[in-house]
Image (cartoon, rainbow over all chains, first blue to last red; front, side, top):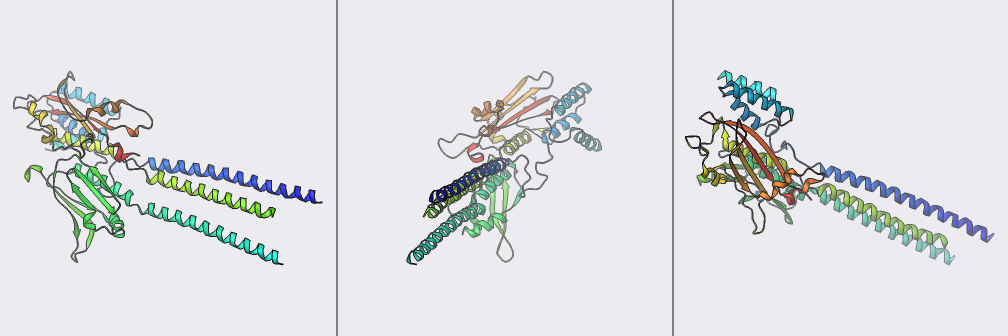
Length: 117
Length: 140
Length: 172
């Protein structure tokens, strides 16, 4: 009788330990997952476009002064050869994705504004 | 009968210690989280960089109003006067929202900052905004 | 008695779990709040914009850049920082300058360099060519170009390279 009771008690203790081990492993996996997630979220704190609350939305977003300067140079050219050469270079740069805004739209806008003068 | 009483007493004390230690752990954790969430260091980092970038983009003759309302909430809590949270010294913009911390960021624009003062309303209360006025360095 | 020993073991284990979870939460909070904002991309862009506006603004070349005959002036290169209102000086005797910029003027037809200006710490130039994962510890570069026309009708391709290092303030 005593031996039987002892065995029963031991089985119960082993069962509980096993439960705790599994629980610990699950807790560790969940924690590692969340820590990884938190560090990924922390990594997103790169500021690419300056549109924080402290400045207006039009500060740098949607602007490319380099393209605008080049287009202004283009509209002031008198030589057709130079214009053609510059056109080709613009198209190549546009294909390479070097402009931050739409090349075609900006070109239309600047040509329009220059012809109005 | 006596043995039973002893066992009851031991179980109660153990449970009390167990619960008290649990509460202590949770309390420490919550205090830590609340301090982090307070974000004085976080806001100092963010504001110092934004102010430095604004100064870098500024041109002589510009007047810039900067919204420091979120920073004011934190600085008021930490006992820092609103007029002292932004300090521009040389080529550095420094934001200080608590006694123990402060963050500086360098700006490359060689411009003169005539004014970097907090705005006040008609009652003399701080509005939560700062005004920066810029001029040419040679105009001193 | 056997039950009490089991309970004591579970109590110790319970605290061990509490400590693990608490450590996990602390790590999570530090992983998020510990990260600084990285503004160097914007900063290098702002620097490039400022130099571009200094050289060519409103369709006009800076009159201090060229002589009336259209020749580049050496004193513009020498006084470049002053002419373009730039100040790279930092506090601390052993603190290195965290910026570098170069401006090259190339002829329109042959794309040959006619004039160039350099300023800042050129040790960061090599960082621009490295494209690896986890390159936050390297300096951030911005390479921009535009075409400018002088009063005499000559066209130049102006290439501006601006580099901002500042890894301590922008990364962990």
